[in-house]
Image 1 (cartoon, rainbow, N blue to C red):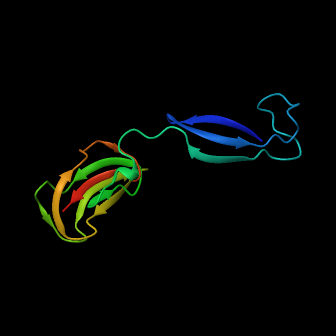
Image 2 (cartoon, rainbow, N blue to C red; image 1 turned 45 degrees about the horizontal axis):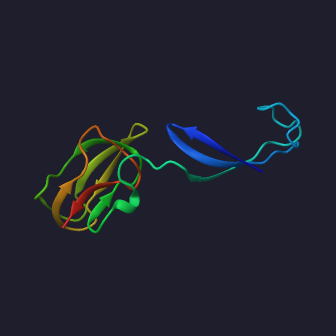
Length: 126
């Protein structure tokens, strides 16, 4: 197994690649009788912006990576459980981020048009 670093969309990943023929074939040439296998390990480079662990009490994280389309709340607004707070778009589909419980919006941590990562805090409720 060889450990290699691969970069996809600006994020680096470490991968373990199994050499099936002992390395005698030129690079990029698959082994004729067996397919190459790869195991992807954890990302090497952290995404820009807050990480999922940066989410504190009352913060509502993004369920997926995408783009903020609409913000339906403002700081100081009282919301009920299940109300739409943010609309995200990913792969031409909208996802609604809803309040998990009632409370007061303490802060909106993103703005319309922002790109967000999965787990990134979007809104905090008190």
